[in-house]
Amino acid sequence: MKDIFSTATLHHTAGSPGPSKAAFRVLSEQDFANACNEIMAWDGYDATPLVSLAGLADALGVARIDYKHEGPRFGLGSFKALGGSYAALRVLQRELSAQLGRDVSLEEIRNGEHRDACGQITLVSATDGNHGRSLAWGCQRFGAPCRIYIHAEVSEGRAEAMRDLGAEVIRIDGDYDASVLLAKTEADENGWFVVSDTSWEGYTEPPRDVMAGYGVMTREVCETLADAPTHVFLQGGVGGLAASVAAGLRQFYKDASPRVVIVEPDLAACLFDSAKAGKATTFAIEEETIMAGLSCGEPSEMAWEILSEEAADFLTIPDSIVAPTVRLLANAETGDEVVEAGESAVAGLAAVIAARQSSALSNTLGLDATSRVLLIGSEGVTDPAIFDAIMAGADHV
Image (cartoon, rainbow, N blue to C red; front, top):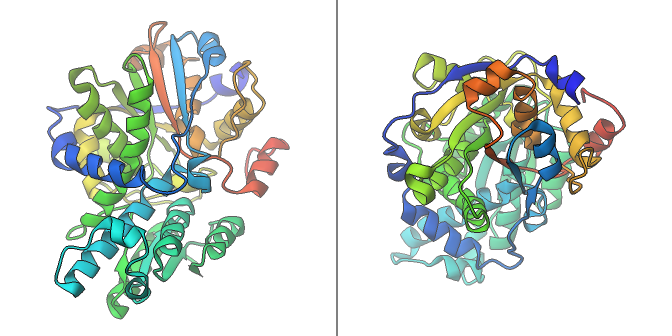
């Protein structure tokens, strides 16, 4: 472990945590409460495990490492099950309320009272895999047609998982950001409804609902831990996961909220570049990262509002340390519980391991023997073929 991670180069830039107003303004405590109350009422809801990696913590010289394992979430394999499905339900609620001229409850839709009407409301989104799978699952539950746009590098296994849930999957030749643009364009032309996990000017309600849905995960963490973490390492992407967790932790722990460290692939570092520029900044992706769910070049503006205040540090990591981290968890190399994780899930853990091989970076991040580190293991094995290749020794897939 040490030889692999000690040779990794992690790039760091400091954030500028402010007075934390965005953590309450962009996502309110009521937004989180509404999402939690609804999602916890769904058939099949169960809290996912918070795995103590005590053996790894001892090996790295920190007090605790807690890993929130989202693999079992609703049988969909990732935390995204909480966001896309809930946002879909909220889009249907708003549209049905407008059509019927009265307030339609989420419970009515959940219980199938408007299934025929939902069948006339098409929901669309772009995805790297997990968000689209969540949206397809929600549409299947609520009776709405679903169209999912994927880019050239999304694996066929992830595409097939969405088709199995009834979605029509459209693959394009471009990258993730091109698939987002096509989804928006065709939705506008056909009167469909975009359910995206990223926001842009004039488009905020579904992304807010997506992030509110993720709050279920944060609530479960906070209600399980006896003490507040000192650090939370959060993977980047468009920033929705990181912003939701950072806001949820701030609302729960107030001034005792942990130090927020954002981790991204060096091949898709839009949040890192945004931190350097002091504003939301697009990153030109020239090569796809192994961390497919984090291959995003344009940050969510809404998420950036929160992260620009809450994140203390931004790190980029090389792909070379990702597969070894997947194997470390799955093989229980430090004597901890076996965890089978996807490539995007281990970004934060890979960064912690590499940072502890550098005294200078550990000092910069305030990591020491008293640190209690929280990690969000955002996905389990969402593509078995890729996972099997990694476990067979492949470092690039």
